Image (cartoon, rainbow, N blue to C red; front, side, top):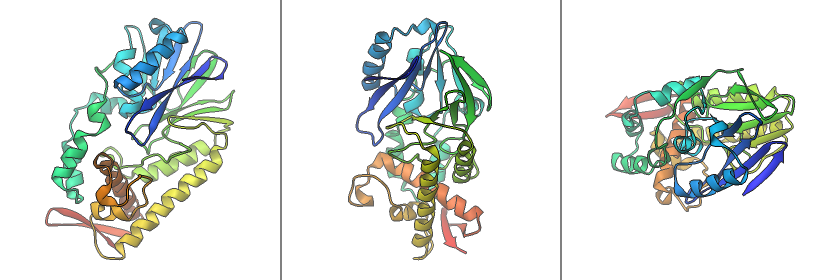
Length: 322
């Protein structure tokens, strides 16, 4: 479905079947000389079968079209290899450009998550079902790195790159100051909350995320266009809700540890997750990876605040209240 948002600005909603996200918003800005596509959907038939006919309907000439990727998750980056042609620019934050071009290995995650109590057999199955493994780009396109503050122009829109690490190490929003529009990617979502997980490239993902929320709170915004679900107008109210959400998760982690020292995998069932299942044992295996990663991020935040400490015993990382 194509939704016309403003002059030269369209949203194409792409389905993500059997995924809690349900769909992703692909934004298209049409210009006289160059078009711009913001995020692409996963490299899977269900996305391709909606996106390509919609681009044809909008008469988007891919020979005159560039891409902007808010961050490196497969639902935002997956179809870049199918869309980009010779001469297309694929804008990507410089921090994540280095990650994309680096060595592709899940070994560091296997080590970190197993150290945090994730059973290795369940972990390997969870990673095998990870969208980044299954639905990544068919090829790595030529990337044009962008920096915080840089401006990209298309279709009468002057889009300032706003680096907002947290959901990913170098997540980028786009801000149109004249029109007061914020393309928020997965930094600010309204119907759901962004996953703030452990990343080896960030010392404290949650602290980075909260600082990035403060950063965008200073922008004059009338319309937020997120990566998933509904758009909204009051970004300041949503920022306060997101901060409250993470304070609640921090409190849940502290409450869990009052029962004794635990690994992150053992703390995760004490956290409130918006997943339709009766208990942790019924939790979708592919989602356990994200849940434990988010638990680690919250425990790291608490440790850096001196609320708890971590120690290693028998090859496992345990967390203890100070």
